[in-house]
Length: 147
Image (cartoon, rainbow, N blue to C red):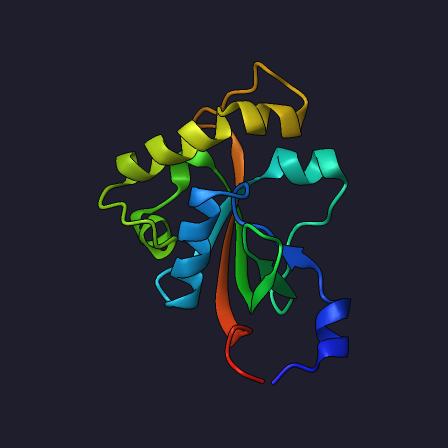
């Protein structure tokens, strides 16, 4: 069990924006269906944040910003969007049966007004060459369990 003081020192992990998609992704993490995620390299660069590294732990927060889990990064790859494989897509736990299904849902998210706002570019778009961060992680602790 991770001690409260240790939890406070961990960075937060936010999946999508607060709302139904985040709720779905958090539920998939908690039930073990989601063990991977994909981010945009440009988002890390824009925010001046380092890329994730294996061994890094973070606290997953839900749509109400409550801590619900601790995850640990197990691997990270940087690839062009065209090289995302089906195994990674399926490990994201969103029910995508094909790489095209995965790509369509991710492009919808990355082209959303919310993402355009975050990136500060209303014309941002992805293509096959867009560099993405393929992150795998494991659930370390479900924080909803009684302590």
